[in-house]
Length: 127
Image (cartoon, rainbow, N blue to C red; front, side, top):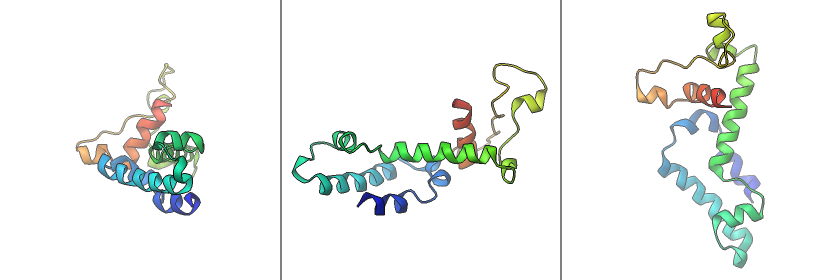
């Protein structure tokens, strides 16, 4: 049952996940919680135990992992690499402890700060 629901819920998640409010995230988790309750029936005790029992991550965790995976593939892509800023070593020419990290995007607004590309840059720098 979850194999049919998860692709619909997670469609294009790397793009919209960064701007998702907590209220909508909770509503998405509610869908998985209901599905687990149906699957486990009387054995369902709590959402976290059901996820652990069926070896399922929460949808928030899955969206985070999908976004990191997408950001890493974007970083390795020859065709779309220009969407991300250059690595600090390429800009300054100096090898430092953070020379492997990307330059942070300059964000004038909160809306841009919580959009996909700056969010992926922060994720890649925190790996």
